Length: 490
Image (cartoon, rainbow, N blue to C red):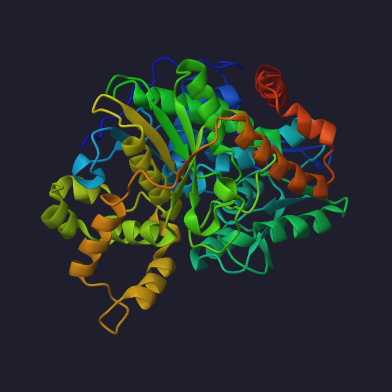
């Protein structure tokens, strides 16, 4: 197991090299109106060394002392306080494969998830376009959890009221976190698999001109953030692991924002395989299927509008209960990891708290791909843990009620060891679909069109997405956007 961190040395970025001091929402008033609360550029989120050192010091203090201080917006990046990417390389005793499985850790972001990044990016792009201003619009955040939490958090820091639209069967902790950050909830029927209902409700609320939607499934700031910011962090983290290259990048689609990091990786390593992980209970990308599952935070039953189908190479299925059992093992099974897997006590302790359910799903898919691609000990699979365990205690209680054998909701060590080995060491090279061919691309484009023409997008616009020129043009908007963000700060 390696827990080394990559040095923050070579990230490139656009935008200013210094930032104006951050101010609170109450301080940002001009001519009787709320003015814009300052936040980082894309370049500063990619390379936080560009932020003025005085702002960085304030932001670091605020991250632990006052999470609702708006200066926390300048903590929206992948780097720890030592200037290294937050990541971990999993022990081979756990993964059972030769390849390095490198996981970026999203729980270190403000609000506890990297989804705060696209929430902020979408909001700030609305501000520079003049479409929204604090105190004048209510922000809508369609989500299954982490994006909604991020939306509530960023909205509060920037002086907006927020309504989060999400299914009514998500974890208790997600709802509590949204309320903690001042967000209001508009719940729709169903579970993770019913995110389309949240979109329908969002479009209904969007008819009110006083509402403004941070539409994570369809707006390009989400793509820009993950390609430019998350993609760069993946490359930086991989430099000191194995041969320094990335052989494979794995992410659950969700909004498909995180998958955009694969576009940045491919710009450096064009032979990297980009893989979408799906629950086998709802294999929409894999086989046009629909169903219910328990991997909170990834959405499904559609090809999202911002999913760049061109650069997705494989779809890999995992079982939802394997993800839950895997999380239970890493969170509560340190003694099992030592005794049954051969993981050292120190390493086992380091795994506690930093993963959520979708992160385990990404890890299991990474293991499957390492086997499928027959990767060596010099090669690296990179994936992402979107959030940490703090969102899932109630889900673990439910797991015990469903699967425990002691009559009190507990799962004994013997069963957990067996199920954990089945989940990690049993992650085989099956149920992996190659979608590089034209027939598969056409099928995914057809799915996308069926979904998004329902919400008013034209065939002509959707057809543009079939060419890489569309995505490159959106990506190249970043320098101009950064200049406008800097201009807002005066």
